[in-house]
Amino acid sequence: MNNYRLQNNTLYAGVDEAGRGCLCGNVVVAAVILDSTINIEGLNDSKKLTESKRKLLAKEIIANALAYRIENISPDTIDKINILQASLLGMKQAVEALYTKPQLVYVDGNHAPKLDIPVVTVIKGDQLIKSISAASILAKVTRDEQMMQLHEKLPQYGFNQHKGYPTKLHMEKISKYGILDCYRKTYKPVRELIENA
Image (tube, rainbow, N blue to C red; front, side):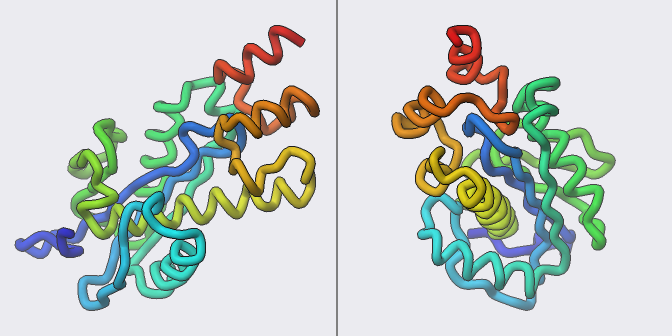
């Protein structure tokens, strides 16, 4: 994995999101600038880590990062501007809100937000660049916590199990109990349930 700074000592942020493929809830975006003097062991794509490992790493990232920011883009905004634009909006907001300003931004994937500093997109960046891995972990842990809060209010929907993703269980639950305000109405499985109701 690449180190936290480039060889010319350029300070950079890593950016990633969680929840793009979910049927409900926010898309959560994180931007992180790591401290090159502190090595956080075990950083990786959040999907490759256990839930307990993600939570431990998230605490370590928050305690040791030079700067981090987490942004939430609502289901209403996702429905208005589409999930790609919502993700890019979250990336832009997260980077611009960092209290330490990076000179370069690495973004996981192949779509870049419009910023007044250089942006480099990296396919599988959450496996290659530590600051992107850190952002991936913060975004995933934050979104999972939001789903657990939803589960506590509405346990019949099983958010603790499917975390909002379109699993067979999730589709059965919303077919039985209905569409909530937190659902993304433009997503095909949700839209079809609304149309057939």
